[in-house]
Amino acid sequence: MRTITVFALLVAALAFSAAAGILVGAVAIAPGDVLSALLGAGDTNGTIIRELRLPRVLGAALVGGALAAAGALLQGMLRNPLADPFVTGTSAGASLGAVLAVALGSEPVLVPLAAFVGATASIALVWRLARLGGRTTVLTVLLAGVVLTSFAGALVTLVLVSSDRLALRLRAVLGWLQGGISVISWSELAVAAVVVAVGVVGALLLAPRIDAYAFGEETAAALGVDLDRTTAAVLATTALLTGAAVAIAGLVGFVGLVIPHALRFLLGATHRRLIVASIPAGAVALVLADLGARTALAPAELPVGVITGLVGAPFFLALLVRSRRVIV
Amino acid sequence: MSRVVARQVRAGYRDREVLRGVDLAAQAGELVALIGPNGAGKSTLLRVLGGLLRPTSGSVTIDGVDAATLDRRVIARHIAVVPQVFETLFPFTVREIVALGRTSRLGPLGTLGSDDARAVARALDDIGATDLADRRIDRVSGGERQRAVLAMALAQEAGVLLLDEPTAHLDPAHQRATLERVATLARVRGIAVIAVLHDLNLAAAFASRVVLLADGAVVRDGDVKAVITAELVANVFGAGLRVVAHDGLPFVIPEPATALERHARAG
Image (cartoon, rainbow over all chains, first blue to last red; front, side, top):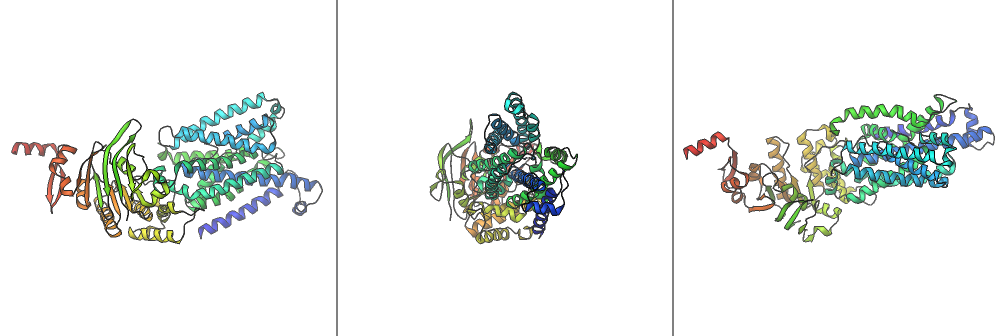
């Protein structure tokens, strides 16, 4: 009963936030004109709604859903409520891949692929580093993530400054890195949507086996989980979801951390249910965060990463304080 | 009816060999207690039997098939391991934990069928945990959590059940209840049970056979009275443990140094 209520509320919230995201913006457009714009009216309003606001709302929803699903996967497999693509350095690796691709002049459509490669390399590295002592602890994962994030960040800066192609658009690229859903085309959106869809299917198929990690890897193996294959599949799926999200919106922190964590209290721990709920919840969170980013200092725009950082970092700290028992 | 056999097993970690040629077999219906001092290799032997650690030489066979040739899913259908650590960070319900026992039988889409639901219900019933089913695992007592984990292993419907220190964090009444339950299940369901036990008296009271391990080798394997003897206990565990007979079974009583001196003077 509670599950049904939570899902009904999530669907309602998604509809509400999408409507708000399309209706509200720097240019005031009456709801009736929004509707006719969506139906194909050919005036300026039509262009604003169809080419700016709608792709932006869909992009934010896609990014939020992908990050929340990736966070649920990582938290389950690492048995670490503080894990998500951002704090493990996966997002930073993905941003390095994306920036390199742009600097090398690749087709925009290939940017999500490059981000996926960067995300895969960094999550695999974090995984290896975290297991150096034989068993993964909450703290080693976070430390490895911190190191990787600053290293990838330094490389990103190096590439930005030394690339002629990027130096001309430095401001735009920096904006994107901090969560720039503002610059998004329908073709980028379509590519990312396909990647996220594949990632979501993978996450849902993996979810029951991630449940078996509840008592650690050894028990998962005893229950019949092939650890090597499952680990590789979970890391690849996480990289897929993170790569797509970063290609659209750069470094958006804490959505992947907060959403699964909050939903676990409402819906319990089984990962299939958790992931199914994380997708709309992450979408709602980021659509609303983006709305805030657009309107808080209008007509100036904040990168959406600023909003998620402002809300998410205190949440992360509170969690860290509460779970210090687990960390030592 | 499953049967697990270890032959001349050598195994260890990196540069440290723990097991140096161990033979062990367990038949359906038996409760085999694995005893021995700390560091004897009991837990390592259990890991090898469960297919979680590959022997460097020798073999483990499950129903006559070499475990090294079987994948994890198949092994998990034949051998269930009750973990020693049963702390989980996440708020699973007891029923969800027990359902993890069906992981090796998940369908291609990762779903559980009606057979699985029946196995889960039966395991909960067997272990007397049906009334706990919808409670959160992090909100039940240590003894209840231990029952949930035992039910999880039973839901695997494996012919062999391996337990590592199943009574480690339990009070005496719960220790007794746990072993009573396990011994009954072995007998009634025809499960072959191998349990690492630190408490020699629990081993004496409940095991149908006792295997004494020291320094990675089997010192003696046999009937309770043939293994828990004054001589072997003194040789393997050292001084200060007196073996007395009670109801025809051996029991081990730890004695303080002052009592030992008194015996020495009297003798």
